[in-house]
Figure 1 (cartoon, rainbow, N blue to C red):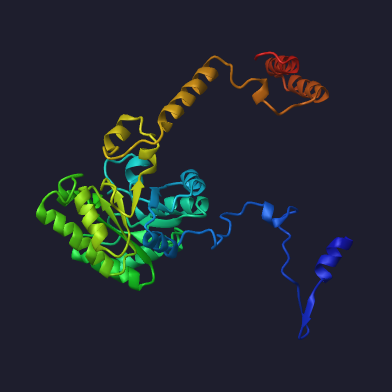
Figure 2: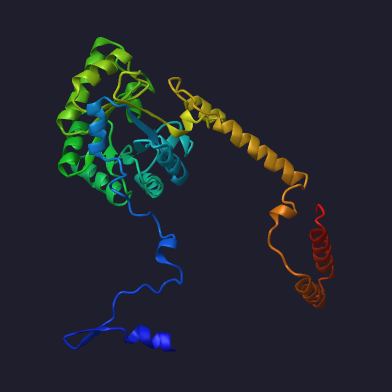
Amino acid sequence: MAALFKRFSNTITNNGFKIRPCVRYMSNLPENTVYGGPKPQNPDQRVTLTTIRQKHRRGEMITMVTAYDYPSAVHLDTAGIDIALVGDSASMVVHGHDTTLPITLEEMLVHCRSVARGAKRPLLVGDLCFGTYESSSQQAVDTAVRVLKEGGMDAIKLEGGAPSRISAAKHIVEAGIAVMGHVGLTPQAISVLGGFRPQGKNILSAVKVIETALALQEVGCFSVVLECVPAPVAAAATSALRIPTIGIGAGPLCSGQVLVYHDLLGMMQHPHHAKVTPKFCKKFAQVGEVINKGLLEYKQEVENRSFPGTEHSPYKINTAEVDGFLKELQKMGLDKAAAAAAEAAENFEAGNKI
């Protein structure tokens, strides 16, 4: 009672009114030990647009990898990747679609929030998905605002090409939001491209790649992704632009590189995944094989009753409590259950295999 009285009497008087100071009484644990969401980001350790520009100016390669959830974001963070892209490729590698078109903004925002909770160091870039920015510049700005405010991203990426998309990028930049462009193979445009086809393989197409990249630069994009274009075209774009180029299937002469998380880790063991893994991707690991092996071993041990054993059954009940429990079961007419409990207790006590 004394402590309670002290809590309510510890007030500050202001013009006759009593104001209690803001004190945290929600938990008996120190506040910094209670998980309450993402921790404050340390600006000294964050990759920002300034960081990216400095690396580009020094000629240092920029690393970007897609991330779609908390675990992948933590892995990117631990590895020191510069940019985490929450790509609409989630439609294919996470949701199982054949294209990037079906994913919705609401689904993308879930992915963005999950990545924002896990990645404390990388610059966070969220894709504007198909159908959320093409109708008007106002729609594009509204969507971009949601990706930052609700998704926790630092910047957005959109696929350029058409004048309307260049205009959308311009208006988003003018709204105070950093924009990464995307030219070459633009997966959202497969309807007019005729599928996932490389671009820049003839004079007209190659020139269009350069012109589009330059146009995105002029409206204020801080970087441009070059996807599935020949290395000479990517080299020309990198030379022509003042902003960094990030290549994916565009050869080694870009300012940086990006790959899809699942592709580079070799997680694609299912036939669906195999058909959407691009041929330009190097598998830096064979994580899918490890996952399959672990799942098979789990299945086998459950089926042969070797898991869980006593070492994976950590919660104990002492002998006196067991005896009382058995008596209560017998009172309830559950003799069979009592016998099962007694046998389990005896086996666990002796360390026998169940």
